[in-house]
Structure formats: structure tokens, C-alpha cells
Length: 173
Image (cartoon, rainbow, N blue to C red; front, side, top):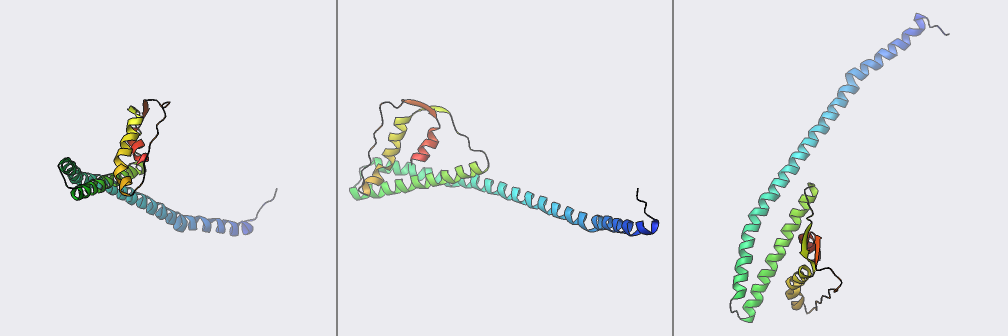
């Protein structure tokens, strides 16, 4: 057993007391300040994300409403008797409007994914019909570019499948 004299123990006690004071007066408050700053930053980021979600939701409505009007009136216009040049221009308006709606939907889907709110539907739909509808939608653009667009759907493909028809359409288009 080793015994320390008071004379030998004083420097050790002084060093221990000094270390305790440094921890209490400098390091711990500094660490608390850093932790507080991190929490403040986290709250600010959460607030910014919520503001972004709100903005996207509001802009979605504000853009979709007039765009649906443009698409609806374009459909009416295309149903009329138009000259070839007028038809071509109306089809371009329709194509551009649909592209704008797809872009808007993609942006909104991205924000839903980011927020963890994306839901994949499980509902029955006709896969062949969905694919044919997608091809029909892009056929005018392919024709304008002198491209041939052919679809060959296997007879072995089930008529009705359970999946998310909207997401499939987004992937195909």
C-alpha cells in the first residue's frame, strides 16, 4: 500500500479541482451552446420544409386549375372542324399543356416522396389498355418527329393486374 503525504497529494488535488472547474465553466456550457444551436438549426430546417410543402400544395392548385381549363378548351377546339395548320397548332397546345401537367405532377410526387407521404395504390386495372392509352398520348409527338411507335402486347399478359396504374403511367410516359 502506497501512502501519499498531504504534501504529495496537494498537486494532484489541485489538478483535479482545476479540471473540474474547466469542465464546469468552459467545456460544459460550450457543449450546451453547441447542442442548443443544433436544435435551433433543426427547428429552422423543419420549418423551412413545412413552408416548402405548403408552397408546393398551394402552387399545385393554383397551376392545375387554369391548366385543366386550357386542356379542356383545347379538347373542345380539337373536336371542331379545323384547317390542317390550325389542328397542328391546337395539338401543340394540347401536347405542351399535358407535358406541363406531367411536370407538375412529378414535382409534387417528388415532394411527397421527400416527405414520406408517397403511397403506392394496389388496385385492379387493365394493363394492356393503360399501355395503349400511353402510346396513344405520345403518338402525335412521334409522328411529328417521323418516328414509328409500335406496341406488341403478349397474349400471355394478364388482362387485369393489381398495381398502381397512375405510377405505371408515369413510368411509361
